[in-house]
Image (tube, rainbow, N blue to C red):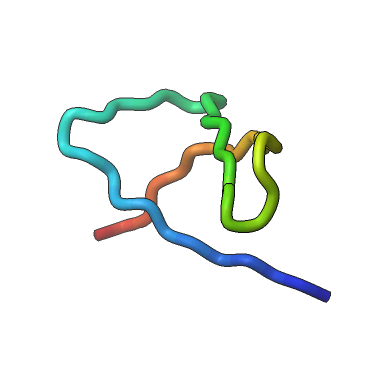
Length: 44
């Protein structure tokens, strides 16, 4: 029904490994509600 899409630019000094995730809070939608997102990279 409602789909949200966003892209975050990876800082040059940011490294990650398979299976890691980040917690993101989208305060423009709901304050104090965090959601885990799997980190992945796409070809540049």
